[in-house]
Length: 336
Image (cartoon, rainbow, N blue to C red):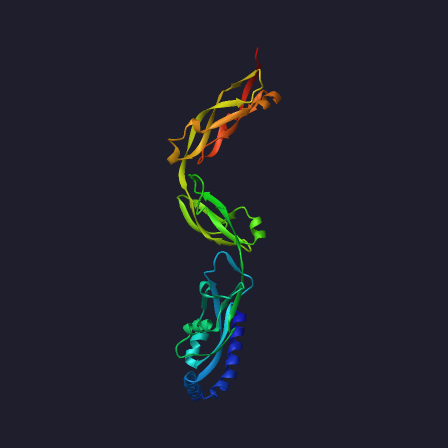
């Protein structure tokens, strides 16, 4: 409480000292002066906007429709420097972004220089493209470069398969049914011989899918490879996701390659195979779709009298297959 009273006394003291200083100012005259100063600035700005000025702009250049069997041997210009003249109010449209100019060069429309692997965009073509981006009242004074030469090289071609790259995680009670379908399954790769020699397939960009509970269709780009061009560069990926249930089947155990003159008896001779299966495949799934086996050579080395049962065959679309029992007893008998 003492501190609060002390602060209040300090504030009152300071207030008494500075009040006479501010009371000496004629605030009405000051505000009037500032108003007319601002008004003068507005009239000056409006007058200035009607005068003509010259400014310099950088116009971005993009190159499109490059044939798949061609690649630039160097880096063509990505901007053209232009100098223009117009009223100040019009030039603001360029500098403040209301009229952002850009040029798109269609490679198919450029000129091929005779006897050289060089594409040419002439000064006349560049000027025409620039004028299309300018407001009619704007005068084009100059631009640089005056022409664009684009050296290129021819690429070799190789047709390669496309594979999906990613991680698919389904929601509880669902699983991926069948293979991931990529369409088209092949792509044309254009690159130098050294690059093509190291490539056997192409992958999509890595894609993570979480909590999937229905079929998924995605358009995915192909993973970039330095120095290579893909045609097409985008593929469709279809992932079939279905609800699943469990099914258990009785499967006979087989043992092949038993040495001549011997027979093997297994106890039990059948095992139970349990798996997760999509609902659409539940009725069709039968014991003929599976095969389990024991290896005869293991019987000769077994000291425990038990053989491990392994899965030999299973159909596509099933998941999490378990075998019970996973080891069985056996008797190896020598024939008479």
